[in-house]
Length: 115
Length: 113
View 1 (cartoon, chains in turn yellow, brown):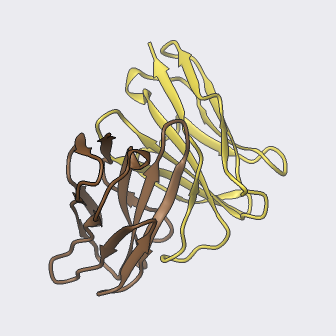
View 2: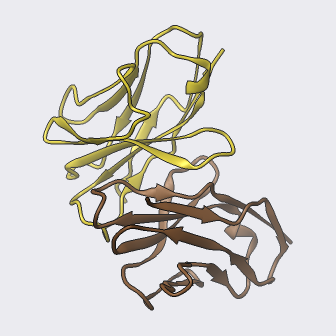
């Protein structure tokens, strides 16, 4: 069964450093998403991406964040200058279509630890 | 706005016990409701969904009924197994707010033999 994959599974970085989290969505999907979950808190929406541009973003997704689809398979989330509060589990998701009743497929997550 | 409130864990049950994980929601439009499950080391997988009031979603012995009058979508299973040990997430998507999902905090379930 096709699945969303994410690398790395765990990333440790120092405050102020740039990180890139990578995702490979399901191949025939057109819509891509990033979510994050700070330990003990809710899974929060960050951004959605379609047709090579951002379609929605939350207030969390400020100028420190960017997303890119550099080739036909990868979807990346970049954090330019990490802060301690960026420590969280980051989930990538994809969907074939966008309808309120249609599921999104999630990857296993990347645990980001900022020290 | 939209939000999901989920029963806090962790929950520990003996095998064959009855499971209920509570989930309530607020929504501005006409939400669809989902339960996702995350097994260790894996992604969130869709467990079941319901797209309108009074719909019942079911899968692998789990059930949840979309109750508009109580704004709830509680997850139930009559007899849990050790293999059901996982984290369970309640979520909604709303016709009025585009394509983002709103999640609860997740409930960790451990089933002991």
